[in-house]
Length: 372
Ligand SMILES: [Zn+2]
Image (cartoon, rainbow, N blue to C red; front, side):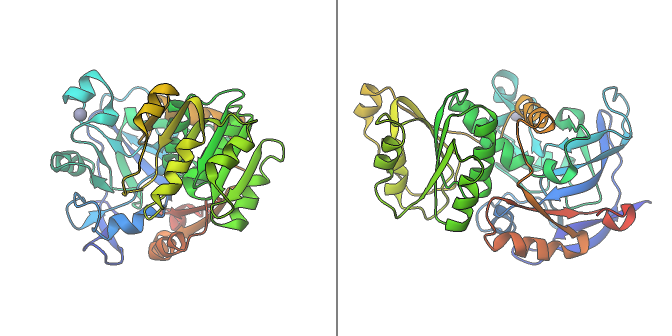
């Protein structure tokens, strides 16, 4: 039996252990990917604590989320990919059979799960068992529809951040951001917020107004474009007035709210008040407190408030193409890479609120491939 190393969670809240486990064999229609980089995101510590999402994979669970690497083996019937192909592996698992998968979107699947991370429902267990390895393993298997080809211009390290970048991209698309858009971004200094800023620049937004707490990162965000980006702190005055003031009295076309758990609801409410008539607010953060809205103003001003989660396969392809062409400029993102043995240090690093320009990744195959 061929084995590989994988970071596994044996008990919720415990440190990950590096274990030798059987190297998986790809099923018909699946491929085996050698993982060169796996993204580590702030939310991981909360998920692995077991306190928020109880549908963790069966223990011991080989965990991880966004993996990027090279196809090394193809199951029978695979025609589109071959060994040597560089790919991003979308961790989103959907059943393909439920009402939503058949009629609307795999993002609404009633058995949805993130491979190596958590399931949203009791029924997610089957999919988590079928794909039991997360990106913090030396190898993972995946169905080919989950793969996005990586051109040479897109590094494995940047591709391992696609989950968060994609989440921001899907929200900007839902808001209709395009040439000339005026965009407000709440929580701009975090991973989602910085990604949304870089994307909005690439998508042609004319004015990007970012709001956050960390002054140092706010300055970094503002420095992305002196002409198009401006930032402010939460404590510098009424947010809606600032948004209106910076848009000739109109308000923003689109507001992307990336605010986290514990945000004062008044802040979320002020962001909505900062929309222009016909404006859209798209929520992608982790606020759990209710916020107040005025329904009649939504009628009179034709406003909308919606939520967005993850991204479609088509959007993942868009993103990689934008990154390869330079329309999505990731050069300001700084990568901190850890070998698999130091995976717990990587989790600690990402918990220390480094801000959205920092990309923490693990290189599971560093020892064998002499990566960096
Ligand atoms: Zn489904």
